[in-house]
Image 1 (cartoon, rainbow, N blue to C red):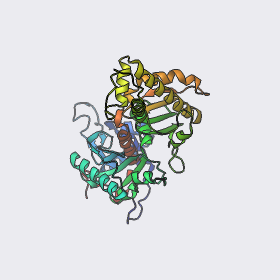
Image 2 (tube, helix red, strand yellow):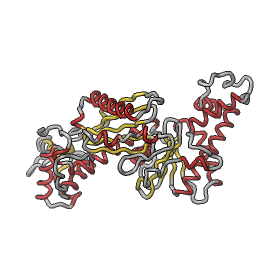
Image 3 (cartoon, rainbow, N blue to C red):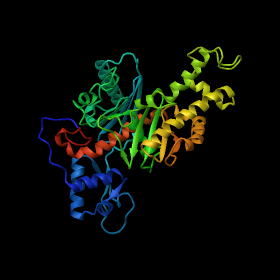
Length: 409
């Protein structure tokens, strides 16, 4: 959360916290529903509901008699969360792209924009300016302004500690990807959260993806570089410097040898084979330019039954099995989820890996599944995290909070 010159507000009453949490998870409700869910007395419930209306977080709807749902006795008051009272922003701030999503307080998307970046121009000042420009552009597309923003969450391809900072790196890459973005955004946003991109993918899978209802899982981002988001006992692991899912250790795993991702490996293997003259004469890949030799082309040929391409798929499956086994040995997850844009194409690779896993893992073999969230998993996780942070922090903001629709100021 951002700092402010105002004195810190008093902690919200437990009744407000309880009723707001109930409203956030519920559709239209009546006071009796809230009393039953929270265990509060009628008078306490009504007082807290009225206070949340005054703050601008709840709205009172026409009563049951007015909408034709009640005919006898005193009609019940009906309430609903004002999901449009403010907005949250979730951003996937990759090295070569920025995907920015503006959503309401329930996480329903209002606007999304993607900006392609020149990956060679990633200086700290330029990156900060680009992030701010992308935020403002998405807000314009949503018809909102900065002062309507309650929470922002940004995912970056770097370890991130609990304060939103990234550690130093040999070539400075991590801090170029996260040039103190939290401090910059806190200049105007009430609640700011910066997270590792794979960690946000893990939050997305747990909220709307392949890990719903699962308490022990690893999400493996498998594009240009491998990264992991780790959830154990229902908690996202971070580590002292945010490195719980950082996979530079793969450099030291025999048979893996680097953190280069699956998409990069498949493309590299095809191009290496072409350079070494190992692609058979007359093969569909023979004679293609380096730019046309991609991992996706190899996977499509293997799916059509091409034996040479199937050999690369088998190699990729062995790689995925070995990486999954590392997670199985270190974290003991019940599920490993392969995510990212490349995941939808890896069905054959995953099939090979599943067959090899029993010989790789000493503990129980984790279930290996492919994400269905595609390239949007990090952005979706950023929105989920922004909503979670908004829920946890909005009542603590006092006068430093956003301008809520329908309230003064």
